[in-house]
Image 1: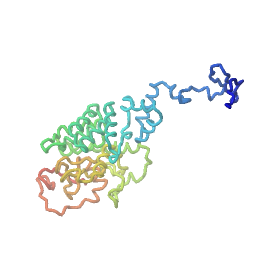
Image 2 (image 1 turned 90 degrees about the horizontal axis):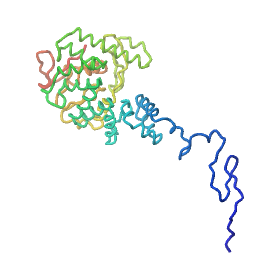
Image 3 (image 1 turned 45 degrees about the horizontal axis):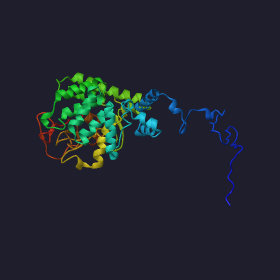
Image 4 (image 1 turned 90 degrees about the vertical axis):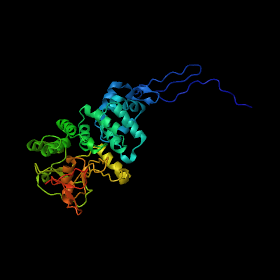
Length: 377
């Protein structure tokens, strides 16, 4: 025999503050006097973020994007919730993303990373234009598109892009020796130097001292070198690094391991030793890219710039200038040569053993297509 079906329930109480349900009546929404339950509710429960205006959230995200110190800072925002994920990938936020926020590692390069950088470029991010331009020009060997991206940033007064284009003009990178345009390189360097780019100031100083692409003016060149050193020292002092008396001491670097990071002395204008400048993520990507893939990825007879913080490879044989004493190291620019000379090469440089013919200016001429560098004193 089937159990009798219940047809009437007097009441059901689930505790204080809850509703009373009676049969035949519509369920009423609970109203509690508790302050916790008075917060705004959504389908997923209490969420105060939805009550913040969208323009205010975007403004906060733009500020966070511009101060990101690593990709993790930006990724953590994307993983918070769907709303932040949507707003953080809007063009307004991507245009302000710091260069460290998309500092992808060379070993983790993928099509997804390429697409993300392209989105930042489309949003008008100048650092993304420079980074992707360097990757395409030197790593992916898409010379025209890479130079176009750097030019896009250079037009809007992005100093690293201006200097990188100057190096390309000085070396005729991506073309032949006849494609060098020294005057264009000096003009680009001058523009980057005006914006305070330290390497451009140093490069312009050497050009004026040597009469390279510009009428020789030793005193003016020296002035630019002093200004580059002053800016380099000011950048270190303003970075919050504790000062050491050793910075003010004239000392020779004692380097036992060339791969170890050391102080980078200035060019003897002030007699100061300061920490080596931080490598730009684009240059670090280049160095890691070719380190992971080995020397074979460069091509037969091609070499990297010997300054560890550069990462630029040759695009043709003997494109870079080589040391006139040892002939072992080579540099894409006089700025890289000056930094590496004080940082490392001054200790390692030794006369070459091979026979070499000398040109009329006293430089060791290893190859007819090679412009060599005279070591600094």
